[in-house]
Picture (cartoon, rainbow, N blue to C red):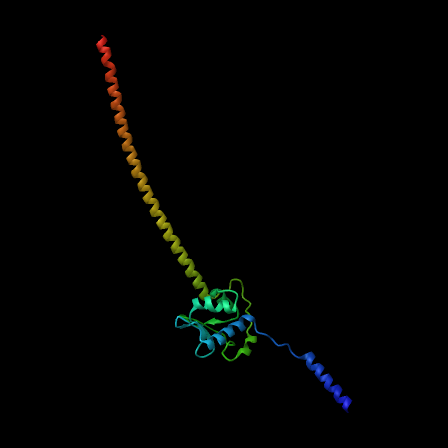
Length: 206
């Protein structure tokens, strides 16, 4: 009986080791984002009297209260960049939704406070190159509108400067024309005087 029991135990152990499922690790981006919320929430990260980032009141999403400080202070601490737009694009690729119009609040049904184990169930979306968050499109559109407005203002200012330079050149040209007329008059008078003086000796010798 003992040898048989030992064999069975050995076989069971080998099956357990051979067939144990691999432990899935959540994507690093999700783990780091979760760490940000857990650690920064514990430390109550505050900038100028205002919270930088935290879970929302329900714990089913999070809010970036201060994007500027979040980019400068929090992102470099956990990621290798300080680009807030890049962080938002990453959220979008994992299916997060922006749920508030007047603040940067994001939610995902499997990204909740106290349920870190659900992170492994969040997968990256198969997005086409054209896929882009609507709120970022609006932001990019606003940027392009601002650039166009600035370019238009620069062109108007340049046009104004060219008109002023043209007016100055016209005034200089008029001034030179006046000088030319005066010079011609002086030259005419000199020629007349010289012609009169040359006639006097001829009359005298006659």
